[in-house]
Image (cartoon, rainbow, N blue to C red; front, side, top):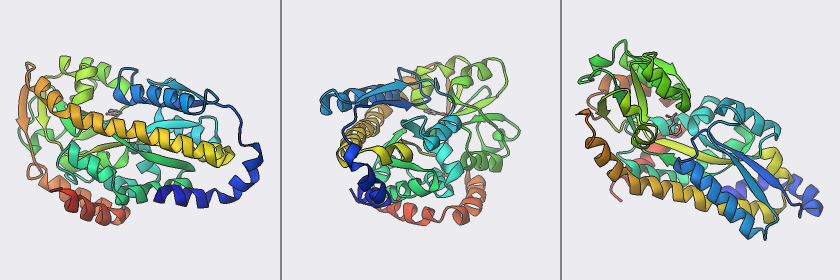
Length: 328
Ligand code: BEZ
């Protein structure tokens, strides 16, 4: 609600201007990169249904999963021009434009998915969303996430030195690139849906990935060594184009904000609930597993901090909040 108040202030003048044309039926378009069976996509569809019901059939949402509207960089541009109304985006693309979001990728900021979800529900994480209207021109409604990041590779990674020279697929964003560069790996930025083929044809040696994606996209068929490192959280954000938001009545904004927030919360709880079973399923596969902790990556972490602490001043606030939430 704090966030809503800020957004309301940002949009106050426009709201007054458009209040007389508020009750327009709309078919919103929502884009995302995950495949149709992914929880982000199923919750986007469920949000569409909720909004339709609660608006008495007035509003509908067409959901475009699997990068049908382009990659995230392209969707960000469409949101900025108002050609796209809404999206569920990884924080990756946002952190390329608002460096403070990079703080969410501090290695070992959180211990596990439950800790990540608690941090994403905190006011400290909410403060980051307040940067979005000015920083990228979107309204950040709330957070979702996937599970913690792990490293799946063709050859075993038993020490940080084994990462040296590995062509390692990353999601295209700067904080993760800087982390792997610091390990001595050669990061290869690549969208999620290109990863299977890149592993299959040997374009990359290893991938940075979460348990859920490893299972649903069957990456384990192409690489059978897993470093269970839990080295980073991987948030998602539900956004509405600022241009579109300004055209909406207060009533419609409230409707969208409430419905989308509920389905983003389902994503957070969904990953909290699935994580242990997914880890068990992966441990049951015919793959070689090594475990790693912050000590394993200590040199890379020190280098990452030296780059990102000055770039992302919010890191201090988030770390204090994460520490406070650690034992809750
Ligand atoms: C990835 O880039 O690895 C990714 C993106 C969205 C959901 C899951 C994974």
